[in-house]
Length: 235
Image 1 (cartoon, rainbow, N blue to C red):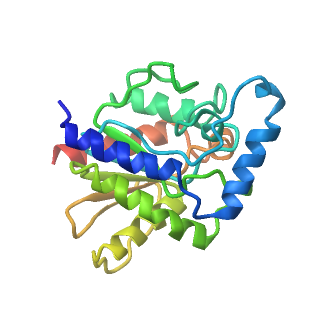
Image 2: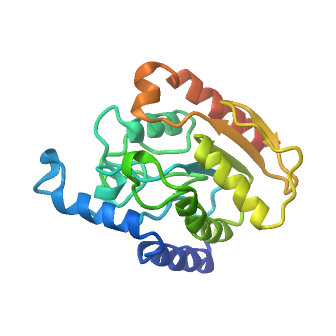
């Protein structure tokens, strides 16, 4: 069972994320996307606000991604959700399902029954950025939310960074927390690092369509990362 305190702490963090106005460029962009919509979703409401993390409050595994997709999480309000069949959400959930961290292998809409077990998904940036490229200042502005979310997830032992931006953001957060890491860990797919705070940080290519459609990231490569994570959790 999850304590009432844990649920309350996460609910407070998520309310603060949704209400955030720290980055005017991102807020303007997300609002415009929600207003104009993609033709395929023109009859659907768009979330259009910052997107909180999603998963098990007692998670030992944390995934740190880049940011919401303009017509995915920015539309549905849930990370890695709604970017269509074969999109990054389905690719990631299929891998989480194979690794027994998710109860179903797809992520189509917030009421699809998806549940994560022992895993939680967060992001370096909580608003969809133009061209999927947040600025350095926008990433720095959003670290307060990642910090607060992690503080409400006290059991996290293993972190999978989905892409270099997520990897760098997590290291930047640890630096803010006073965790000295020398030499600086290098990002690489499947490369695991034991951190001074006892956590294991694992690099992983981001499951974007660009990476999965070109074969830079395959299902087998994704499974390998979760096998490394499982081994780290067992240790």
